[in-house]
Image 1: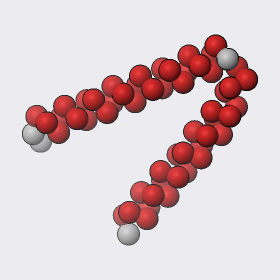
Image 2: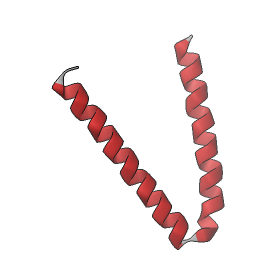
Image 3: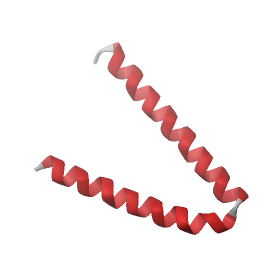
Image 4: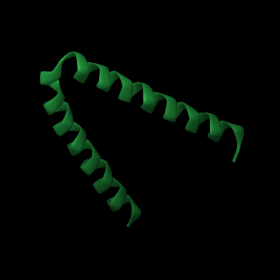
Length: 57
């Protein structure tokens, strides 16, 4: 793989970890927000999986 691809993958991983840390902090600081975030996260996971399944066909 080229260096650019590796840098982009590293950036995606870092952004994902930062996003997860922010969501973790928000749900820790504001517990009532946890349930809606859980539902939204579950919907997003199913949506992304459905798009991947459609795109793989």
